[in-house]
Image (cartoon, rainbow over all chains, first blue to last red):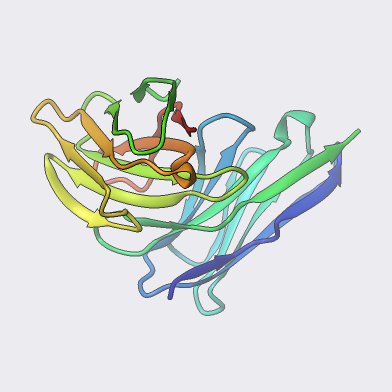
Length: 110
Length: 112
């Protein structure tokens, strides 16, 4: 079967740094995406890694290690508005089909 | 606003009934994806269409079917509804050669 593992919940303090990990076991691998979803809202795209290494976009960075089947999302200078669920998703085929993790709820305390 | 529209926003219906959810992708996007999200769960991929043709199938029940029309809008048909079908149904679109999917606001289906 295909599976993605990520923590169900992470708590951090406003202004701090938090890392959300994702490990995967899939039949195919083209790349790892991260999406953010606020309660009751639609998922929004954050990042995509096809190659090993770190990609930085403002306060958010995403890392991939294909040999370890592992990636993480790093959020810096946390703001209250970053409270949301974060999903990792693996693209498994040439049709851009995504297999999704169950999501990590990020709770930010003042 | 992602540019993807979904109607209706909310739908309440009884068990055994049939409903149709509608999705209009972003202008120019050829791919449409349907997802189901149950309460506090991740997204379950249901089905993908590209330029009118079915491209990939996920965990879609036989009671569910979908199609993409020549104008690229898509419909998801859910029949013989059960209580467990209550969920948020999202549609997403992409240009087809892009890894970023743009999600609509979702349709919240409640089966009573």
